[in-house]
Image (tube, rainbow, N blue to C red; front, side, top):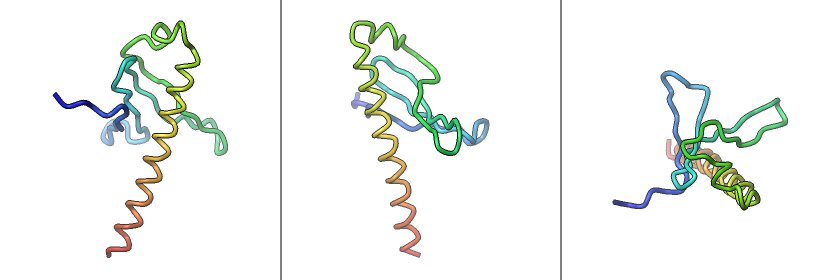
Length: 93
């Protein structure tokens, strides 16, 4: 079986069109999403755990912070890629 990417985007445009989730496919597995508190404050947070994240990182809490930072960097790179891809499609028309 092929190795899954570390992060995957998951969305449900039919029943939950307002949200886009990031699935962490490796242990500890969980779903996260970008949470916007207001127009200026947004962050990535875990919204559903498949594996117990706190238990997994109990001896190294800094590793959890590092993983969430990697996830955030990946997500914002993905968002930039979407914007760039959209611009390329407009240029082709």
